[in-house]
Image 1 (cartoon, one colour):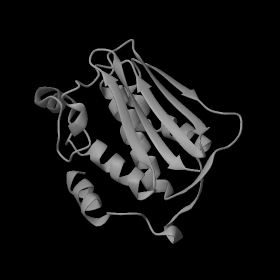
Image 2 (cartoon, helix red, strand yellow):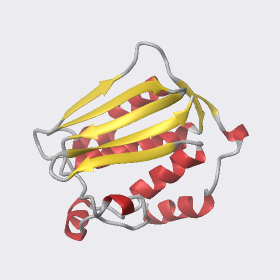
Image 3 (cartoon, one colour):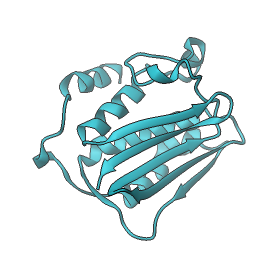
Amino acid sequence: LLIGNLLFLARHSGRLASESLHPVELNQMLKESLSDQTIRSITRHLQLNLELPDSAIVVYANRELLHQAIVNLITNACKYTPAGGWVKVRLFTQFRQAIVQVEDTGIGISEADLPHIFERFYRVNQARSRETGGSGLGLAIAQQIIEAHGGRLTVQSQLGKGSIFQIMLPN
């Protein structure tokens, strides 16, 4: 898995070729992502909510890559949210962009660590990373995938209160 992630980061830089992008209905992709077996196994102790608009939101994307970025964010939110907490995934449009938010009531990220979390191999806390088995590449890969689609990935977080990761994609 580590080698595959490193190869992805090395091979994909810049924007994806337009011929590799196809219409992807985000509503359906998010439903599928939340029913993913890996996510189901780590959310047993959490409340997992999905908020979708009534109408379909379609973006041009590489479905497999975009799915990987979204699953990375949801997985992180679940891993770092204590039992009894919640993770919310929202989809909406704003200013001609599709927005996917992953919000949690997890442990949060300190202000000092926030500027570095998208760096390759960066770990907020070495001990915590060993416990959860992270390589420090998940957020770097998610950011690279979103930027390859012409989008942006941002984060807001408060230590001890949780985080909101937001994907903005051209719509």
